[in-house]
Image (tube, rainbow, N blue to C red; front, top):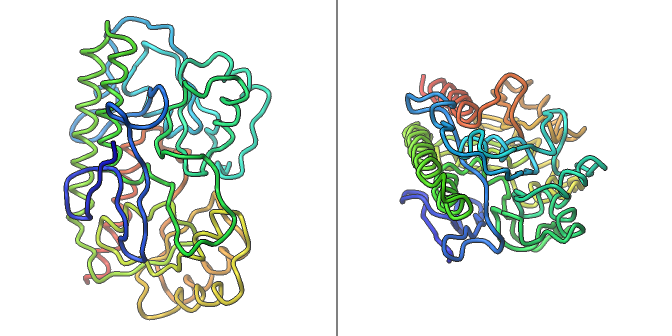
Length: 334
């Protein structure tokens, strides 16, 4: 089952052709969403509740072990299952770049013990699906973006953004679906999982409403990496970054000289209101673009791949990101 939404409609899963010809990928499974035994994901915090309130744990211990590729997904999973399952992540350090992460022997042991393996997909975290395949556990993988979990290094004329955890409406859909699948796997905790999933989904929708209400129409941004793209597009920004630039960055390739020069020109031009910067994927080229933007007086806002050092809750993190964007919108209106 493939769901879809436009930029102004209710939550769903696949959005194509927004801004710069962007395709939003991700086929969730609900009675058919995804291609694996799905078990993962949900959020926390926000909307007047604390993260602990949203992930309350009055259920029975299931003995399940959930291993996620990053702490984004382990945090979300834990908010659904509470202490009824063991949850851990392979990448939980903001100094690491998940795109280039290489699995360790300890990771292999973790996969051997796992009952549920959470992957983002879309070529973002192939290390975890490769481990699952090697361990004969493909059927235990919950992959948010459907399809093969690898990147093509050839430019195909379009770019697909795999950073779907910045897509708040999509996350709300995932959370509700996860609650149902958790209930199937541990029916003794069905009420708990369902309540946690619904509470979290509502908080995600409240955050999404707040983000869209920023009304950044007419404002433009350049990104050194597309991690924040969904959030910024939903706030109303125009993405001034060339898709071929984004594709090269995601594939770990150097940006071609002409495209790099275009990015430098944009970073210092009149149309840009913000530079979206990702330190976890920092390169010499991205540093030079940042320096050019700062020299031109362009505000720089940092967005990360995983939970920052000083924030250990997904919804608190997303709220912080929206706070930063709100400051840019307000300053542009002065």
